[in-house]
Image (cartoon, rainbow, N blue to C red; front, side, top):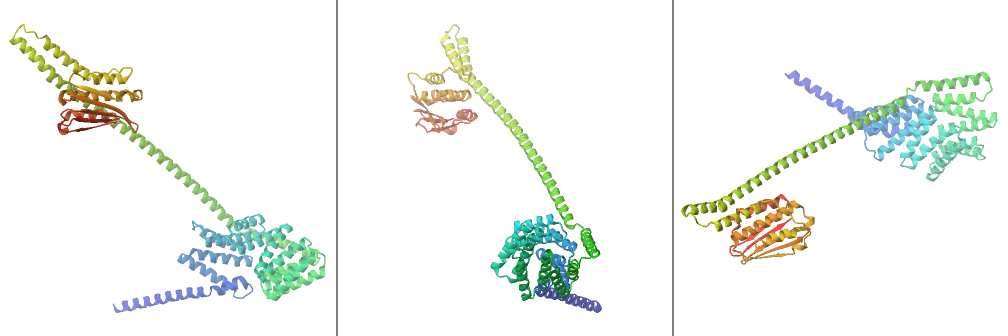
Length: 551
């Protein structure tokens, strides 16, 4: 057991130290960032240049491991720049494509992400330029211009576009763009960039036979020599040699070509030395040498194009495939949403049909109940008011044969007629107010005064027949109730329009009643509810009776 504990402690201690070493390495890498950045971007001839590349490659992998995508993209961008400087355009393109793929994870682009995308577009443009894909190069430079947010970005892209136009033979366009960049750097006082911009401007002017071309080339060279800009000096010597070559001054052209070769040897990079030797050889009119140089340049270009595995093309194809897939997904989503909407509409329609059926069944049930209550009421009336009187007449005839019962029979007939009148279908006159007026005045006699107010102010033509029928029956019920139970001497019915609704107020001076015990009034409430109207009652014992109808 003791051995197990010791082994565990040893293993734990070893892991702790290993982790501490790893963290220390990361800190050292972080501390070394400015050192290697300076080498990678400003000391391309330094023997530490390969170490700078290794540093950025390791740092990129570390960023990916810890999920720091932005820093990983920045390091890939730096790797692409260094690979492009070496002439390894295929590797440079792969680095840019990897960076672009990582940038796709950012749904929204902030200022940092936009600046990174600008740098990536600029780098792709440079790669396409090196591969002689001028149209593709300009297309990516234009993408960079569209999202550029600083003058520094604009100057870098404009300078690179001018280089493409120069190689295309569009010297006037190149001169205009180089001049814009030169003037921009003049305002900043950046001597290193001023010298570079002036050298490029002079190169374009040389092709245009501008009178200031030579002075500009010499001025740019002197500025670079003063700054000890070795690579810039090589470019200036090369451009001076080309200037004199174009003007058939072979001696001056060879002089500056040899000076360019000496600087290339100082830089100690094969790409510079090879370029300088090609420049020198091209100045000698040896047909075999010139043929060799032409074939070699063609083979190099062809080889570079063949070695390029079209990583960017593959990225663009994959991007298009993603767009197509997203379009298909959007279409599928739209179809699903359409199907869902149709299902919901069908569900709502079925629910509406079901609700209609339920309401219709309920309405039918209410109608049946109304018929039942009406029949029960009529039956009760016939039993209480007619059947009893008939029975009394029959008893009277049996007990006293020959008795005159004509008056009794007339009384029974009158009651029967009244019951029939109360429940028969209403035949409206052309003028409904006359129908209502006839109804109300039929309850008037020597003991009861019936008064109607503003009956003629109502436009009865605008009221439906079903509402007219309901109004008629409710008023008939109220007047019958007054005649039988109220003992009123005066009844007043007032018609009016209130907030667009028809309102009818009933009032009598009868003995009043206890509303809680008046079950018969429920019939008027159900009638009013059937037409979405309402009726309310007010009454106290010995204080009359009031009813308000609203339709």
